[in-house]
Image 1 (cartoon, helix red, strand yellow):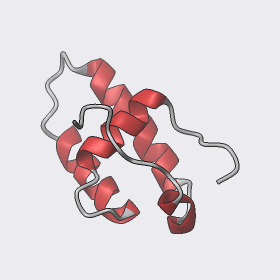
Image 2 (spheres, one colour; image 1 turned 90 degrees about the vertical axis):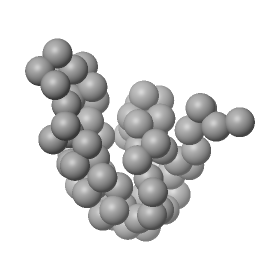
Image 3 (tube, one colour; image 1 turned 180 degrees about the vertical axis):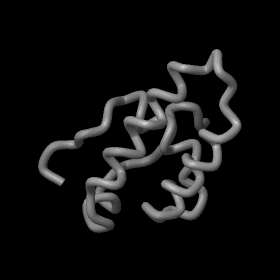
Image 4 (cartoon, helix red, strand yellow; image 1 turned 180 degrees about the horizontal axis):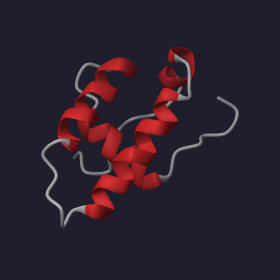
Length: 74
């Protein structure tokens, strides 16, 4: 991928929910998580929506070039 379209925050979010390492799996996990968000979690909902829109707009090959390693790991 020439230019990474994802923000640092989106990469961190995707790293957390990237359980099976596939683009479709990540999309499914983010969609499921989004369903549990409370009304006061608007910022997280917007971040999730933005990441989902971008994930749907890239190919599996482009997805595989992303470095989805969370800053939260030791």
